[in-house]
Each structure stands twice: as structure tokens, then as C-alpha cells.
Image (cartoon, rainbow, N blue to C red):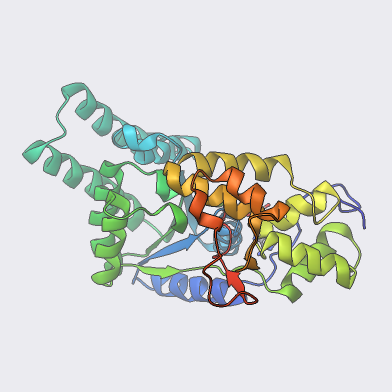
Length: 334
Ligand SMILES: Nc1ncnc2c1ncn2[C@@H]1O[C@H](COP(=O)(O)OP(=O)(O)O)[C@@H](O)[C@H]1O
Ligand SMILES: [Mg+2]
């Protein structure tokens, strides 16, 4: 099977699956146009298709609405208001220079004054929230926000204010974030829990693709139906994550480890605690299941032992069920 679509593209021309999520988003959009706006969160692991889904949704509503886009980037959390600055740039790009510069000036004025606490911050959040409300109240507007897992705290506070007003506005906010980077007690985790708890936001989770959907995506990418063996390997190695399916097909083999995937695994695992890294390293050798009587003399077990510093982790001499397999959780995803 070839590794590329006949036209050389690496992405499928159509959205595979997701009909239910798209239709939910479109229903929420119809309510927004009628004056009852909403905040929809799209949560999922990297590569699951959050951006693709938001893109498809934005394309569908674009003919009848203004679509604004703001994105958070790595390290944005360190600079207050980064997401809003990105939105200000977008407004300027779209010819809304007055509103773009109002947003930017209020943020920069505050940075220059070096406030950031107490009543000054309240004032700032209130002003920025009002600017956003005025903007979204003008006409049916979709505000598409990407990668909230990198967002700064000030922008979250402002979005909080906006969320309270959305039910009376002709606007919808749809925002994506990586659910596997939602760490407990972080501003994003608290923000999300608060808004969901107050019914000011709704959250959806694009699932991994099933075998049939993987086949459809593979066919769209390569131009031919995958063989059963290829599809089995592709589904097993990609876990139905569209990004991995694309990368494995582009690599030409469902058993390959594309360097983009390898790099993403390295980056993510570097964030883990040392002990967790050690367990993950063992899991990468042992696979998702292994015999509980894994012998100290077996090469596989020796490899595991050499990967982990803990000598006891593979010692199963006292195991009560020597022939049964032991399941380990699925490998961590990117
Ligand atoms: N449902 C889908 N149908 C077809 N291609 C998809 C689908 N979901 C994702 N993709 C493709 O997989 C890749 C990763 O998707 P992306 O939306 O960037 O993931 P995320 O934003 O969740 O990290 C992109 O190239 C995208 O076009
Ligand atoms: Mg994305």
C-alpha cells in the first residue's frame, strides 16, 4: 500500500466520523444566532482531531457569521493576556483595527503599569470582558479558540466574564484543549470545572476512530482500500488517533515509528516524574500485556529489568497465576 494519496496530500479531504459532534455544534450555533449564545469545550488528546473539527464547524457557519480565531501557544501562561493579544491581532487582520487596538492598548497599558493584583486586576478583567462582550454582541459571531491548555490566567478570567453573558448574546465560543494536559488544581482545570458546574459551558470529547472509520481515513489518504492485515496493524498501532493514522500511512508502514510521533513521545515523557518515566520505559518494552510468570532469565524480562532501576518490578516468582496475562494500561498518548 502506498504511503501517500495520489495527489501527494497527507490529510484526508473529508472529515471522517464526527457527524454527531458537528450536528451538536451546529444546533448550539442555531441557538446562538437566535440570541442564546453558548460556550462549547472540545477536549481530547493530541492528534484526535480537535482542530479539524473546529475547522469544519467554522467552515459551516462562516457563510452566515463572522468567525474570529484566537490561539494559545506554549509559554503563553507566562505572559498575562496572551490569548487576548492574539485576538487583537486577528481583529486588526480582519480590518477591525479600532477594536483590535482597544483590546491591545488596555492590555499593554496594564502591563506598563505593572498592576496585576487586587482591585486593579478586577478592573482590568471587567474592562477586557466588556470589550469582548461589545465585540461579540455586534452580529452573529463564532469565536474559535485553540489550545486552551497553554492559556494564560488573565485570558481565562476574561473568558469567565464572557461566559456569564453569552446566554444573552448572538455569539458562540468554541474552545479546544488537550484533556491529557489538564492537570489538577491548575487555573484551566478550575476554570473548566467552575463553568461546567455552573452550566455555563458544555464539553464534548471526540473519540478515537473505530476500525471502520480508520479504514475510511486510510482509503481517503491512499486512494485504495486497505487490506485486512494492513488495517489490523494500522488500527493497533495508531489506536484510532487520526494524526497517528496519517503519520503511519505517510511512513509507508503501519509498524513504523514516524520521527514526528517519536519526538512527540519524547517531549511528553520528559514532563513525567522520573519514576513514571521508568515505568513508561518498561511498558514500552513489555507491551500492553505480558505473562505474569515473566522469567528472570527470559530476554524480554531482562530488557525490562535493564530499563527500570527497580529490581523487583519484574520478579513474579511468587505470582499466584503464572499462566495468566497481566494487563497494563494502554501506552500514554501524545
Ligand atoms: N475526523 C477526521 N477525519 C479526517 N482527518 C482527521 C480527522 N481528525 C483529525 N484528522 C487529521 O488528523 C490530523 C490531526 O488532527 P488535529 O485536528 O490537528 O488534532 P488535534 O487538534 O486534536 O491535535 C490532522 O491532519 C487532521 O486533518
Ligand atoms: Mg489542534
